[in-house]
Length: 128
Image (cartoon, rainbow, N blue to C red; front, side, top):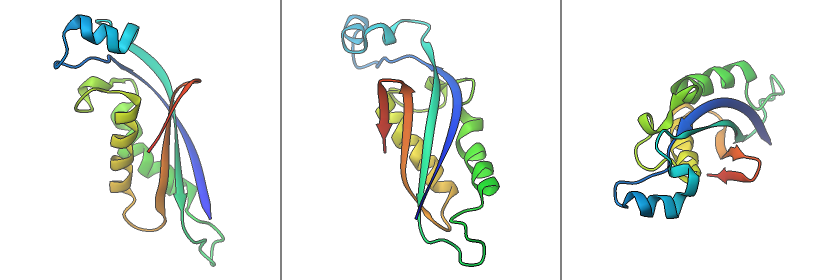
């Protein structure tokens, strides 16, 4: 059985790396490399997979899941500059992987995280 939970947060970032010149950063990342950064209204799907508890009929208790996700991820990123929270270039690819690691550390018991899907824009979805 799988359970997918949706969460939302707002955060800013700037795509740039010190290994490239400012011009190269602009060529690679386009307007996302502009000084001052930009923001997104992110959505993140956390998908769990495991066996349903025969006593409760649930894969996971929703309130407990929400509390853990809030503590492990949402409180760390909501209304923050991701460049100050996540090491490295804050591409969607990197964010999805980092966020999955954070969430897996909060869910070491019970059903496993099957995947994390980070939706940055209607056209950009990253699955880790």
